[in-house]
Length: 336
Image 1 (cartoon, helix red, strand yellow):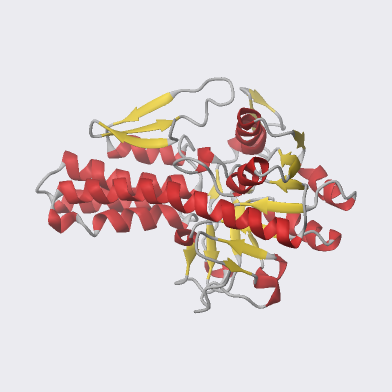
Image 2 (tube, rainbow, N blue to C red):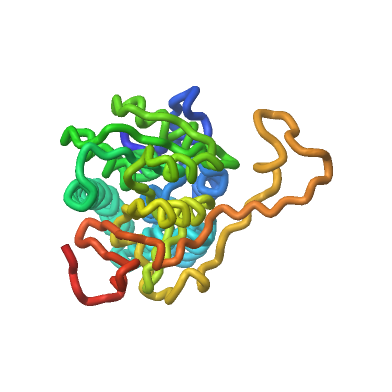
């Protein structure tokens, strides 16, 4: 089952807010419905958001044939639904560029985004598994954060795609998954995916991830990314930066697995990225109940910036970039 797909001129997506208790497919037939799904994290994960952006423009083109102004307005609403993840705007812009050719061309481009996402994630996963086994050895114990598996993509995964490739090669010993507060994507989604794959795993609270590394329980950190800037800074789910600091202290490689579409060469550094701040209810409420005193102030960053100097390797479908030793995404050198 694909995380997001196109059926009968509608977007079909797994409702990720219902996992792990229910596996529910949601049909989306309006642009407003798609924007709401993106904001509520029904659809989340950088590659999946790229697909959602392209499919959203396809949906708008179907709903408003011969009305480019309406499609352009819809595209603007979609691309700003979440400001930090670059893939959402990338998918919108890619499909919108085909609008002068008609709605069929827009749909074809959106479907191409889906197929390319699957192919590039399989390629980067194989590349990441090879890099890790060559540099670190096997079997590996991996620490991860948030969810960068098939649920974050059309299918297969980025960081968990690397894990899957290692598992398939018999080169994986164990995965330590951080719970990923405040919305528990690691606990709800990553652990669910690891169980589906039959991968040995252990869930740890976010504040224990550094201790996992300090005690030598994990031999590599592998995470995804929502944006990678021209200098190699990595914007990912909040909690990634402290994990990178702990990895550096422990002498453990910090590996980022992401498609080339997540690299934003137009943005020089992580300091130039708008970091999404979400509502405080995600912190002070959980499971229908209050977990903090009434009136508590909140600052709910959805993402953080990991400086390039802390990133051992960025693995894409085309290359391996090593920012910690001077490699940059904007280099013309292809790499491995």
